[in-house]
Length: 412
Image 1 (spheres, rainbow, N blue to C red):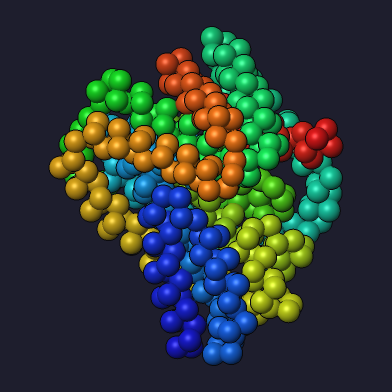
Image 2 (cartoon, one colour):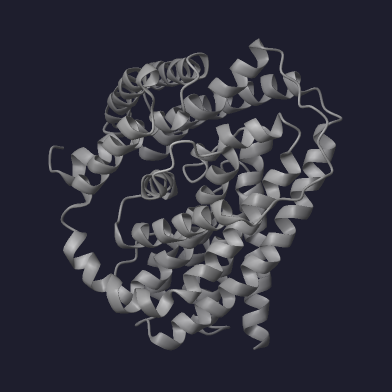
């Protein structure tokens, strides 16, 4: 038991570091540790190492929202939460937002565990029915969102923005510049740099944050948590989809046209956390390791048995409970200290830093510098267009969804 607790502690520690460090993904640390797993396993059991991976990935998923909210630096899992999160931050409700993310993620795990017997009975059957229709599922979902969730004035603009961003995604993700640089280029431009430049142009300042962090766990909260948790399960069954796409699926499930920033934040957090756990459970249910961490675990354990799932559930409860507290404490501390910083100067520094990192990575990987820079400027332009036209930045997820649809339909 001491080994298990030590593995959880180390996982939480590294998950906190990766979650709070923009650009440092949990998969990177996971790959480094997996590469020396043979040596590590001479000192410990395979299950203990897997517990470490589970704890690290869940803690990362809980804390990665903080830099997205405060510094507007997204990862693929948090891109959609930036705009609603910033709306709350600029209303002085940053601390409340951190709590919505934390409790939304925690409750989604509880709900997922409660539903586990039902999921184990029916999801393998559903998987075999749906696995050949992922492209159609995505297509139908996006049609519902673009038509049903936009009023007549914004519908045509939203569809056009979705299609143009999708074309950009096809050009970038199917080029030879590498997926890591490609994602850094388009996600930073669309969701981060464009927001920062828009804030700089409007001379935006973070207002004093309210100390009142109370919120109601009402029917809307419960509905958003359920939608997020259920969509996380769907992602566990459908390879190639991430939490950003899962949030859009959850939105179509609820059919809520007037979803508030609070509800969106809760749903996105629920999708992200439940997807992280369910991607591990899906190894046992359908033998489908759909995330990098689950691939490492499936290679370390020769076969996943039911007792391993019980261990993973126990570890998840402990990790998410601790990470929930860490998220609130660290988030509050960072928000308090943001008040002492010139927000415009910080924004300009982040724009410079992200641009410099992109250029350095491109040169180091022998990528085509002018092509990356052109795609970067185009991404920023599309992101600014969404800001100026007051359109939801979820429309820009066409950059990932259209390539996914075309891939699953066999078009590319």
